[in-house]
Amino acid sequence: MTASQIDLNVYQAARETAVLTDRSDLGVLIFSGETRFDLLNRMSTQKVLTMAKGEGTATILTTDIGRIIDRLLLYPTNSTIYALTSENNSDNIARYLMRFVFFQDDFHIQDISSGTLVFGLYGPQARQKAIEAGFTDEELPLHYWRQATIGEATAYLHRTDPIHGDGYLIIGEEKDRDVLWQRLLDTGLTVTDADAFEYLRIEAGLPRFGRELSGDYIPLEANLWADVSFNKGCYIGQEIIARMESRGKLAKKLVQLTANRSLQAGSEIQANGKNAGTITSTAVGPHGTIGLGYVKTAVLESGSELFVGETAVQVR
Image (cartoon, rainbow, N blue to C red):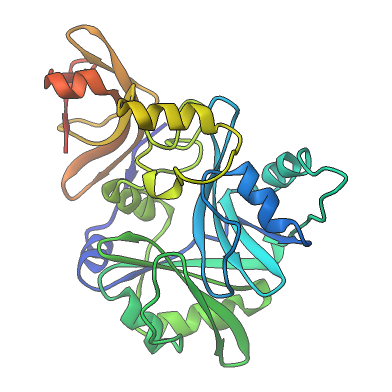
């Protein structure tokens, strides 16, 4: 798997103003029914029994041994919950959740991914650019959202995980793609392609599905502590996650890495000639090669030198 690269102008825009990227590969599901909150609460790591319209949260679906299935972003309305899944994963998540719908549940799923656009807006001036495009000037807490009318289009602004200081997702109907994209471009935003966004994501330490978010890892190892409630009722995988939290000891941890040569995702990290972890993502940019990877905590604590083959790797 080759490393992603980023143009210097795009990188500077991300650090100084804001950048725009198309994230419409994210899945979009609608949950409805009287027991929608109950089912999501018993299935995932976050406490989601009650949320009001305009609020939001991140929660993680885990296996019975606490391994990551996917990270969902939940956005409630008065009668439904919208959920963003990871890239191209909405069908898998819908099928998985329906396996746990019992006869007493009133829970329904609609997949609207194909008819929905998702744009990402990142950087220190992301909020100002959103305001200039016609969205609310209200300062939103993380994952909260507000509806807006942009020309004749209805769109939704969602505060999201930041890159270079701030981040927003803009969600709307696919039919309004051109109108919304142009309105955002008119604010002077710089467009990033997939490779550029990958570099920015890795630099920010944000985990991605299929790389850092997979059945090989638990949420705490992925630094997703804020997505886990430790004082809620039972959910699938709770016992393992609670045990790791109570012991205060993780077997491995997601860290940011740098190297003076290119790296390949999937490569083994070694310390003192022994396996110490795995490279999960890598990219090349203005500061050379950067990456994300899981490294054994004992190795991190020992301060041992890390290598991928003969290439030295440093923890940022």
